[in-house]
Image (cartoon, rainbow, N blue to C red; front, side):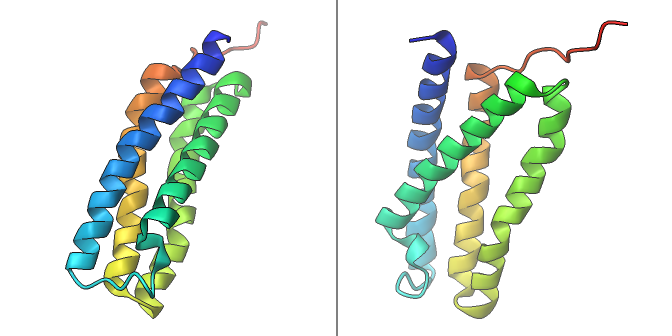
Length: 136
């Protein structure tokens, strides 16, 4: 197994474990505050555990692709990560406005919980190279 594959696997495992714990706490708190898991199935363990894993794998893959191919990975990620997070919040905002405010807010908080675990973990386990400058 290559160092890159090992780092990728460890990063995915670490982020998924940490984010799943945080997402479980967010879901429990939301339901305690009145969020309806029947109206917002993303608050049930099968949904948020699966979606957390899928999101982490996609995020780690995107991070790895940018790190490998971008001329300046840090600059690319400095706008790409916020853009992806904002786009990923659109369904949560719609859920909050149309179905269940507490449930939609909880789903949005789950995105930030994953991000809070993913960024430092990816920086540590999948470090970015220095910007590559073309030779003149």
